[in-house]
Image (cartoon, rainbow, N blue to C red; front, top):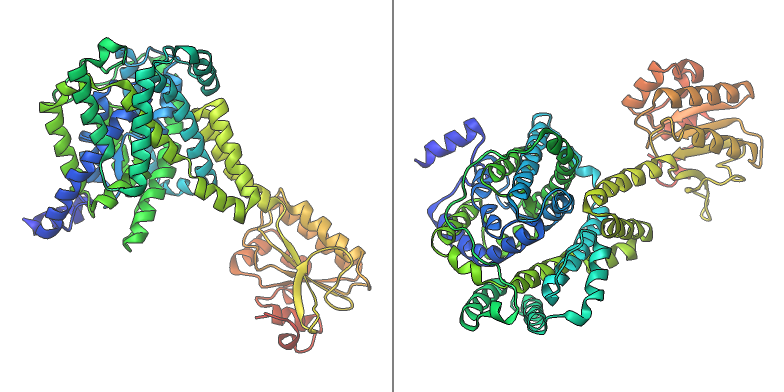
Length: 570
């Protein structure tokens, strides 16, 4: 049987996250799956609250979606379930289209999951897993911090027992402040107790399932003491049984309105899932197949859409919880799904007594965990500029919303990359104190030797930075202490040359040659040489002035024994 399953896995690329699996590993993962369920069930109930969906739909996200990813995904560790980031993304938009927890709202949420599944399937077909690289880790830290702040603010109303809800974080905060005089004291006391206990136990006894204990204790206390009669809001009747399978029905216009929401969820899923799967694959020295994971998450979201749930994501926090519980394959997640089935069939009726404030408090502690202060301070210590980008992204999420904040995060990541390529570091070899040539920042007034400048441009040449290359070269030559005879371009960092840059570089080389200055290209790789040939730069500088090493280029410029004079020369 085991051989048959392995053959099926190899042939159809399924169950890669489960197999190979022996009896000992299955027992270990089964026990870990039960422990994971005890920790994660309260969290997914809280995520349903963030999403504006009925609490039971949080359980739906860890049933069929978990099974679908285990079947089609490749990661042995990634937990695909409800997630606070994606829940906040679509909830912020759906709240303006339908009342939370209504049938129309649930249909819209299911359609977002279906559209997200379609985008993920397209990404898998065209092998777009590389898109995860366009959301930098720095900006992702800032984005998650912003989500944490926004989710934390959204939970304050339930934690304080304040009625009313605002869609924007600032408005919600102002609402809580205005209603401060009407805080329900018992609700606030329970909330404060739950938050303190969870945070303290998380530090002292991280493996203790405190959220589950809080849920069970809250249900028991609510039933015995009749919390609802004392003004403490509770969930109310929760539909039991397995999720009904149905196709989400929305209007054509509503579906078009949901496409940007699904696109935002798609970007978040690709970035966060890839990061989570890579972290744990590297920890256990396992291969990473991002494209296969995209297929698995697409299947999981399709399962969520047809089972009355909402968007699911590869959660870094829940994957870390699974790892701490001891799971080493998706078999542990399948056992988790089996535990959820038991809860849906036999224990869902007890959920009606669960106070909203306990769920909100659990979610609040989750939100606190999303704000990675240690990571932010580490970024600040190493790169103040990147820290500013992370803070800007967090502020954008809080002030303008998660849906637009994720787009800002992607734009900021790309702009930062373009900025570095637009004005790259440039260097000139100059005599050092020990007589050897050392690279120094390229500022006018320095030269490598009388009549010689060795200039290094630190990026590919393209239409946005070609003028910087030309202007920098002209300034160095015009302000050199002696008349220039050779201008050597160290092209080790240049692998690409587009049409616009080729025109500018060709015109510069032609002008310098007319002024009696020989232009020599050193460390030219095969790709750059091909571009130079195609764009007509080679005939201008002549093939005799294009070299694959700096040593040959300096010899062509008449410099004797460059290896002894140039520190670090090849």
